[in-house]
Length: 123
Image (cartoon, one colour):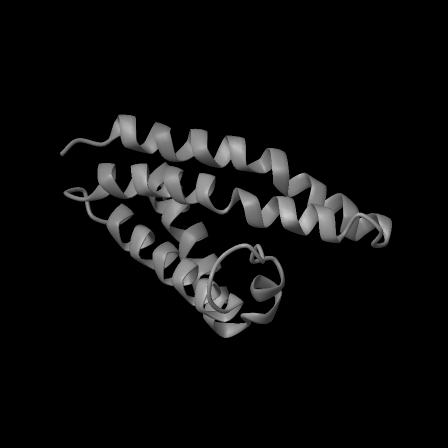
């Protein structure tokens, strides 16, 4: 069996997350920053749709570079939700707190991964 390429694995991650936004939106609703206008559910669906669109772009060589750059931007854009989760869970049981705090530095390798896919892609 062939190992997935960086772009394919990144697309799979984004597809899984994007589908999760629609299949089970409640956990995502809870981490939408309150400062955003409109309903949390709208932002959950918009971010899920963005993840699915970016994943689709990653699957095609012609759009892969743009999709990878969009993925990097998306990972940066969702960082405030991860901060909100860490703040909200600061008094949660240790395992939940650890998961929330671990999401913060995890954004760095995700952005790096997306940029690496972009560098390796040709238009």
